[in-house]
Image: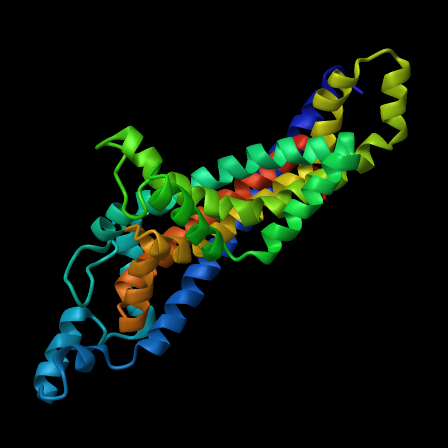
Length: 326
């Protein structure tokens, strides 16, 4: 075999793995977009009549339908919408006339702050608690188990109400409701998302912590770990350089699923804390049958999920080279 061939082979596997995961994600993104449009189209009913009211004449309704473009075949409507989406134009709300891109752009940073903040805090706390329980066992393990039971048993909105009562109303450390944009005040922004992020983190970190704890315990029992110890490597180096990389793969997968779940799970927390995110906006648009708004949110959600899945797959592939060949 020519010199350097193994290196090229390894690089080929990495590129092939990334390409496969990207293409798979793009197929899922396309399928989700098409199916969502067809389902929403089927459920939208006579939009022009709903907008114009029962007193409108047939001619007025037909004019409104032509104005909205809903008098065209469904595939023509989808092609027009998709063409606009590629140009960053998601249309206008059928009910308010506001540009969908503008409306989502105002609300998305709020929801994104919650999702990213919760994911980062979940990763940090889960890493600390999972490694602590997996290596120390005993009292540390029992504490994590009790915390896990509480995390599963207590709904997120209950945790949110407790946090508001204690830290917002009684201690007045954080605002009970509302949101401060980061460009207005970083401190105000941080305070406004702290309690919602903690409420979302409490239940979600349970599954990541348990996954990491179990993986650390199983990895520490492997023969190759004992071999590293006989070679004189310190326990700290073995744990943080070798064991964690081997054990982190499953935990990263669970964390990725948690991130995706937060895209929809943040709705209730946004309502509890009166945050102007996408949650309430989505509920209102869906209830009224505002197809351009709902499709804009569906597309954004699908892109976020695609990016999260791809990032998770690449991270797992980096941590576990065997996954690149699966």
